[in-house]
Image 1 (cartoon, rainbow, N blue to C red):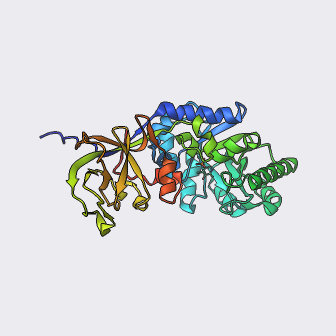
Image 2 (cartoon, helix red, strand yellow; image 1 turned 120 degrees about the horizontal axis):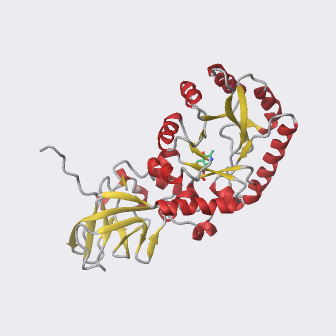
Image 3 (cartoon, rainbow, N blue to C red; image 1 turned 180 degrees about the horizontal axis):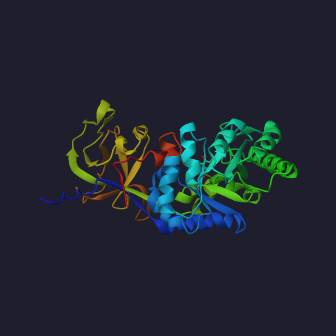
Length: 369
Ligand SMILES: *Cc1c(COP(=O)(O)O)cnc(C)c1O
C-alpha cells in the first residue's frame, strides 16, 4: 500500500470563519472605526486553530496578540504583514528572536528594556510598556510609572511605541474597571506631558470593549468575544459562536433497571434505558467535572443527559427518547443542532470554570476543520 487510509473523525471542531469575521466587525463597531483591534490568538487561537483564525482575520486585524515567541513565529507565517505583539514577559532566551523577528515585546521594568536594547543592531527596538493598574501580574506599578517610564525612554535603542495595561475585573466589577480606566488614561497623559512620543494605548480585553468602549484608548485586545463567546452575557446576541464541537455515537445499548453506569457506579439506572456511548472523553477536553452536573449533548436536535462519570475516551448519554438514534450519528457537544444550542459558557458554568478554559482545554485529538 502506498497510502495510509484516512481514519473517520471521532471528535472534531468545525470552525466558522464567517462567524469569526462577523464577531470582529461587531467588536470594531463597538469601539468605532478610530480604534484599532488586535486579534488575540494565543493558545492556538483559544483552541480554534491558529492558522485558520489568523488567515481569516489577516486583512482586518491591526495586530495579532500571542503569549510567546513560538506562537509569534506561527502567526507570522500565516499573516506576514501584520504586527505581532507578545502579551506577557518573554524568557531571557526568547528575546533575541523577538528582536530579529521584529515582534513587539511587552516590557515591565528597566532591566528588561536594557536587555532588549543590548540585542539591538541599530534601529530602535519598538516595545510596549505595561503598567500595573490593578491586574497585579506584570507591568510597572502605577505609582512608579512616571519615574520608570522616563528611565526606559532614555535608554538608547529603545522606542516606547505603546503603553498598555490590563483589566482584572472587567466582567465582574464595573465600578473598579471604570476607575481603573480613568487612572490609566490619566497616567498615560502624564507620561506624554513628560515628553514620551504619543504611543499606541491599549488596555481593554473583550469585557472591557463591551462595557467601556468609550475608554478604549487607540487599540483594543479582543480574545474570547472574537470566538463568539461573550464575557458579558447581554452582548451574546451580537456574537456568533465560531466553533461547533462534535463527536459521534459509537454504540447503543438497551440497559435494564438497577444497572451501574461508568466508573464509580455513581449512576444506577432508575428504569430501563437506551444509552449511547460517545467517542469523546476528558482526554479530548470534555471535562471530567461535568459528571453529575446535568450536562447535556445534542443528538437529533434534542438535549440528551450525560450519565455517570466522564471517562478518558468515552461518555454515556441517555437516548431513551430517541429510538431512531444509532451508531455513527453526529453529536454536538458545543454549538447548535436544530433549534437547540449549547454554548461554551454553559459547559463552563456546569463544570465550575470559565469559557476561556473550556476552549483552550479542547485536546489535540480533536481535529479542527
Ligand atoms: C488573553 C489576553 C487578552 C484577551 O482577553 P479576552 O478576555 O479573551 O478578550 C487581552 N489582553 C491580555 C494581556 C491577555 O493576556
